[in-house]
Image 1 (cartoon, rainbow, N blue to C red):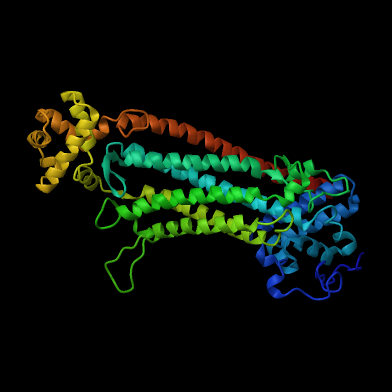
Image 2 (cartoon, helix red, strand yellow; image 1 turned 60 degrees about the horizontal axis):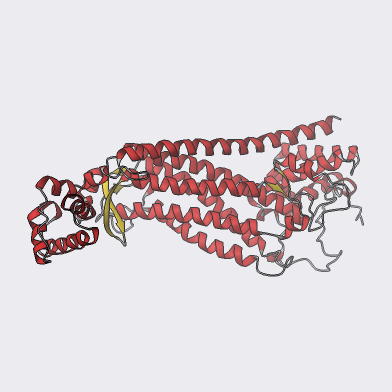
Length: 504
């Protein structure tokens, strides 16, 4: 029933005490405050306009009413949409508040026909998620391109690879960079796939059953840039596996970014000294004047840890029978918006950090051969040259390394005679490797050059991998551009529809 609120009246909203409830909500329970909406206000505003267009086009509201509503929204935009909605208050219903205060309830009170807080906030959630996904994909595009540039520049920058925190085998900085590019390419693929499920419209589903008004859900979806309406009205509002999927996709991405930051964090220490960070990503100490702290990397690692807490929050919010968890989703929404924004910022930070990173090639090469990481190829040489079976060769090299360590013989100082001595101690015939065969096996750079197989660290293998990765990156860029163009086209289509009604 209309309250008879007229234009210029201080309308306070449908939850005002005196209707269903007799008391105002406690301050911390007043969830319909505009300051809680953040950037989702843009999605809410777009939905308000698209819904008004659809109601007008279908004849659900009179043309004059639609024209008045849309004219008021244009006036709101002229004075500053965000400020006008904040002043009107009412949270997601700030559009209705504004219209009723401006036009009176008989006109402004018709905006919400066939709609609920359920589809209103769900549309805004999805549009906000979509903006974050686009930003993250752009940042990933730049980061992946930077990693591929690094790979091309460092195909012969030999460094140690690690397992169990110990030197394992020589590899290259390019091999490390392309590994992360592959990881981030999978993150991009997950986000693009997620976008396909995200870009479906809940508009018109109301709170679970839709409406008995003849809503044109496809038209609203088109005006908002969605591919099509979600096909089931209850599922559209009360199933939230999409949020759980998004939390998982973002958490995986955050862990990959955190691992990259962990590597650079470790390598920038005095003990490793393999890289030097640009100063703008670092801090210092109030008491220790010599300190250069990798604050930027620690910040990324912190977000990776935080994302796991967000994951638990989102999953926990969905506990309960269908339709029971409603208010809990506000926590899910808040943390997912925070994580989406936070990842966008950190990913945009990582690409220039890597671009300006000082890579200490000489130090990497020194470490690559200093701790027996090349021993795998010495065993392989025994198989190829001496005809040993692999297991015997493996055991012999293990004894050889142990005895050299005990005698404090460095890898590059060891000779074939040391290997022969280890063989005699095991009761084996001396392998008798030549100096040339032994030195080739013990050369960390040679170790890398021999691994020309697909996915290996040899320079020619890296060249092939970079070429393939650039093609995938270009294809991903085209997919992202198409999705962004769809959003731009929808925004233009919505404005054209508003103009047509105003001028009609």
